Length: 129
Image 1: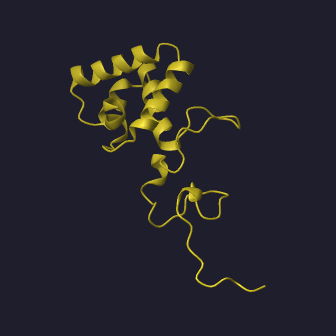
Image 2 (image 1 turned 45 degrees about the horizontal axis):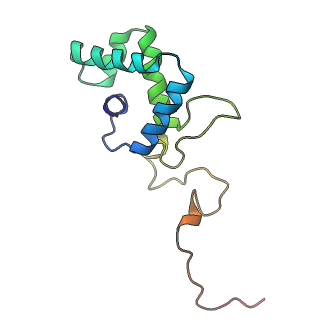
Image 3 (image 1 turned 180 degrees about the vertical axis):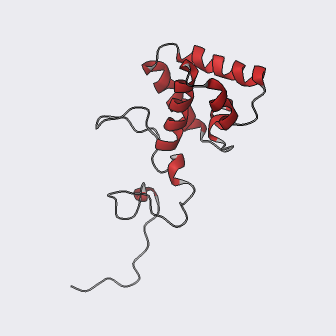
């Protein structure tokens, strides 16, 4: 989670999403844990203050891809492309957060994502048909 906070610049990341992303990365990317450890050591050793400095310092090396995968996972809510991609975050994907107060998250559910978890509005007067 510390690496995710550094990589995204967001302090209040959902730990459930972080855990799901970590398990998915570990299942799909060989040596992912070692790459995360190497990234964290590189940040500590080089004293990078933000992700932009880290990204410039990685210079397209093998850890650069790992960093971008982590950022993509948090922002898009998926870690792979294609029609069979598993979604780890939808309404909490970081790409929707900056404009959440003015832009509706794209969905086919007319009342928004996860609308069914809210208490429905009561009907004062039953409509007549």
